[in-house]
Length: 251
Image 1 (spheres, rainbow, N blue to C red):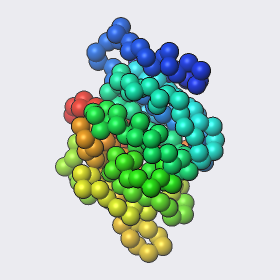
Image 2: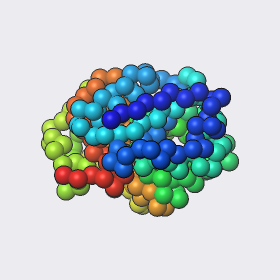
Image 3: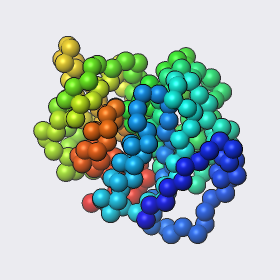
């Protein structure tokens, strides 16, 4: 069961002020926040939906695609203090590097710190990069400000015992994608898999988990290309990571 809703700014308040009580308990309630520069968010959203469907995971999905295609935006939905109240997991797949408002960013991070679980994908790591505060970066679990060139990067599993990585192949190589340079791994984060820079050989987490206040966070820096989003191994990791964040991952 997949329900998708593309929201526009004029109806944010009306939609997000009400939680649906008619939904069954079994579907995972997801909010996908997406938009900004540099990526094909419509296609990526379709592939996220397809991933859950192919893994027979029932979800109730709402999609907020807002903020235009630039690098600076503030999404009206976050003005509601209860913007994330109805959801098991919020998936952040947005790209707004030059948004720097401390007040605005804390509207997002407070909800997660108070217990809203999350999945963070690719350019979410560079979102709010211009901000001088570390709230968003602590929430992500990593700090990144740049990336290496596009290539096909081998992925090394470093936490094979973690339930998210069950079934993840030892020799998976990404489709053509970007490797994000991780300059800081925050204390509550744990790397699940890494890739090496082709420029200098340095190792960087590319899949990880994080604890932020009461929230569980799963993250990946991959997801630049449409080919990555269509890849079955990447989709498997997204599904298992989302279920883990929701506390619903059962082998």
